[in-house]
Image (cartoon, rainbow, N blue to C red):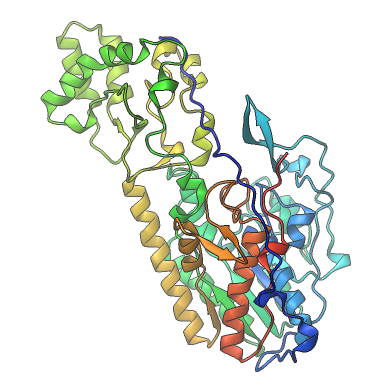
Length: 503
């Protein structure tokens, strides 16, 4: 079988026109008496993960940090007595940290005639040198942090990086090698705080395809960590705002690549008879699936419509031995029969309840080099076509349900603590669901959706918002703060912030 290449093209880029008519975001705050209400914004501290730090385009870099939602909040709080808000800025606009192999940010570039995200070239200059003497810093968002990481002493200890007990981003601004994010926040005696944590407690599992390398945080562990965070942050009388986490299946990292991206044109790009050849090669295996009572696992490619990807699903019954036995009985040499049995024992075509990861687009339809190194024939090694897509590239229905159950449980915990400690609550989950709808959200004539690249609300990693997306989030925080504490902080205009940069 000849090599099959799959091309996934971005939709044509539509020009967005920003209208000049005045709206609620254009309000001149100098004409309005801004009131702090029942809150004290003089010492505001923000705790969280990458979403708090301003991370976007798969990196943390200066202009992204300047457009984090806490910076937007702090700017609006200054109208009502807010104080300084320092950020542990990276050294450059690339965002990489070479000494710990953190890559540079993603940028759009033309690749083979199509726009595609690629890693920016250049020598990033950020090191792990500690910046605390320039602080303390009020934006305490730590990319990669889970709920319990914020309370762990030594999370900023450089000597614990190799054992993965520390985080390179916190190493840069921790007050001491044995401090925690929470303890450093409390050193500042905050009068107001924001806490948005919990995304990574489920997102890590999702972005690894549920392959077991990054498990979902145990519910009791999450509950205990979150209680410690809220209880400690409010212990000095500080008021605050906390936010829930979005359903990961609403973000473009999981919604961009369809379950059936294999078009007849792509499959026959190198050989007009390729589909017929593939179907012929699968005919005997399909007969066995039928005979064993598993017709839903049959592999048949259409020449008239897009085809689903072939995946490995560890949740379904393993038919490896049965397939091997039947193949041997039909005269197939035992070594080949055992190989085929193992390869297709838990394979099936993907369906609409499966979610392919954005990163899968880079390997679909291409030879699996690792398989070839291990002796798999080239014609049997085409990812998602003749070689079932491994678990790390796809979320199956079973894995999606686990994620949804955990998200619901985490969000119930967050909402309960908001009520118990009388804090403002932000429903970010609803905001992301609104953006994921076909109609999206419109501000001043500009429509935003969660569509990858062209939607405007998300950055090039498909997980983190763009500057404009963070502005939506900042406004949700502001609305909740105003409602809870009777303040009237002005909202920000999302159209004034950056979307995706085009070459």
